Image (cartoon, rainbow, N blue to C red; front, top):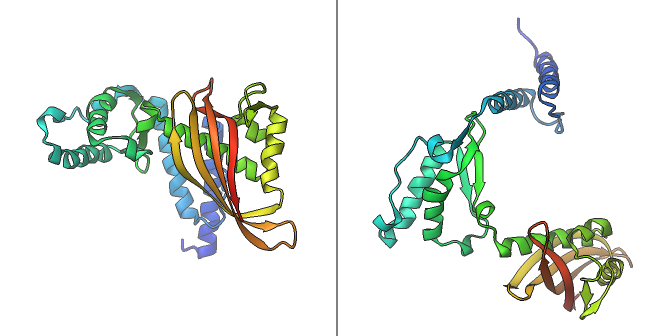
Length: 274
């Protein structure tokens, strides 16, 4: 039977509804369509892949990454000349990619080629995971998941504090603030409420943030953990609704959190431009 385009799309949309319902009933997954612009045939393929993934997950067995890769033989780092290392890393990453595994480093300047090569040929191959092979899906590993980075954790802490700060979301800000009795401003102990009110005063004239960027300038870790960062804003002011630019330069002191990562202990507003 020949269907018009509208009839064909209607049919596919009805089938997709059934697929979403089946996924919800079988796996408790909510795959409600969120973008009406997605063509129904594309959504149909996506839902088919999700179903394959869920079915494969049910039957997945825990294996080492090395077994999943087909037990390849990697050259030992002692066998490689320094100038050969970069090329060998690419060869090893190709083996991972052929087996639907992606590996990334977030703080690339902190990881040497030697350390990364050892990671992908010695450490990660011994890692156990539930290996799944489904077309269109990949397994992703991040170096920092195995080797936490103070620099990355500090960036995350500052970003997750600044973004709700710009939205004046005090409750969410507090998630990344130290407890009362630990927080200080100019070495003076303050409550969380006082800390929030103090920092909100820096954006008292901001009505709506149009663009925002955080530029990290310097990090220091040790007895005191400090982050020097600029918050760059384009915003509409409360007076006149005109667009303005502002740069706030902060020096944050962080402390280790009981739940990994850092918390904000204190801040210094070094300067405001704009």
